Length: 241
Length: 241
DNA sequence: TGAACTGAGTAAACGGCGTTCACTACCGCT
DNA sequence: AGCGGTAGTGAACGCCGTTTACTCAGTTCA
Image 1: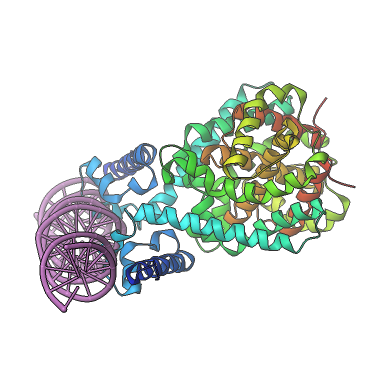
Image 2: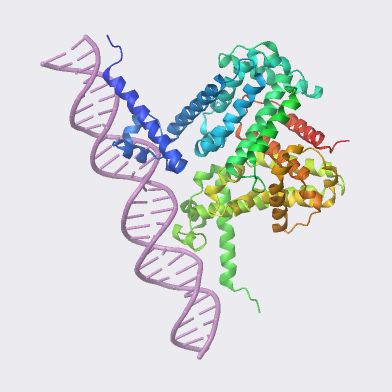
């Protein structure tokens, strides 16, 4: 009847518990404290047992990254559901604000996922590393683009950059298809690509600097500054009015 | 005669060697490989001896950060000397390009200094953490501002943000005086502050994403994209033409 | 000059870490 | 009933940071 055996059920359950405790340790004490022995201790088993689930500590941390990204994407998508159907500007704002709020509320997770060279955490191919959080935003922004917001993004990219942008257009199109997201042609045009990059650079820059507290001086009213960044972004891209 | 004793000379020399080997390990194998025992091994001494120089491994890594920042600041200042005296736009570009090139050429150093929450590496006061790299740019941008480029920065900040910017103006002014940099009044006006923040957000965003390879897809011609970012920045702030 | 002092470096030890390996015991299948 | 695979164990290895008691050469000063 049940094609899932007792053993399989137990395995999945244990795996889940491992990740939960790993997450708890990360949040409470930071990356360094996410130790195989500490996790095992909390689970009431011995450390070598964890090697039945992960190849190494590093492998486990990689999985933890994936979990975190999934959660983030879920949270953003959930917030997105509460926004009017065709208010693309508001949808975009919701994603941006949601990302900032998440990062500020989960600094340790943010650091683990967003602030380490992709080569060291990912495999050698370089592909899955980009997946890490690139996917988070493609997952969110993809539907947005395919819904029609793209029609507005038809300016912004300097004409002398068009040639350089071409390979990036293909890369973006490829990334969308890999994620199984159907998008109209304009969504991978030079203006859309340029918009996406500028958008991500500014959002990431602000959020990372705020989380790491690496502004050249202590910034007051960072929230207002972020709002200003958002409106400026929409003006630059022709999404306003 | 010589007020510096042999012992003192030896101490300074050993300290220098420690940091050199620490740096080498960081560059070659990453932060995790910078262990007290590894450094001691390379120096031909035992690990506990290093406690004569640093309180802990963490303390040593903090010092390493300071060294790295100093080097970066030196490099930027050196590049700046080769730029015409009153070409402020070119000076700004030089600093930005220099920062990007340095980061791409020193990914491990960049990661150590720029990609960890300030609270964990710095002391509790929060002050020295800002110093870390804020100082690098204040040291470079301070002279630039005091030389007169500020006269151009008199637009940009939305008027409804002026009130929020006020405490930041004071913070910037304080940061300048701490660094011993004299700047004219306009250099800490709302427009200057807003300009500085926008500038740092975009530069840092692009560079960090490029170093960490965290763009949502593999970006081709990142150098051209960066150049575009620079020109756009000058346009936004009225430095063009 | 020689005695007292200071501080760089050592050796041994502690507990914690990731990882490997030989092993047990039990679940699921035939 | 018996067999194979697999979750988990326990001991061990070689790392690590850090502490402690110690040696002994360089410095200072009577």
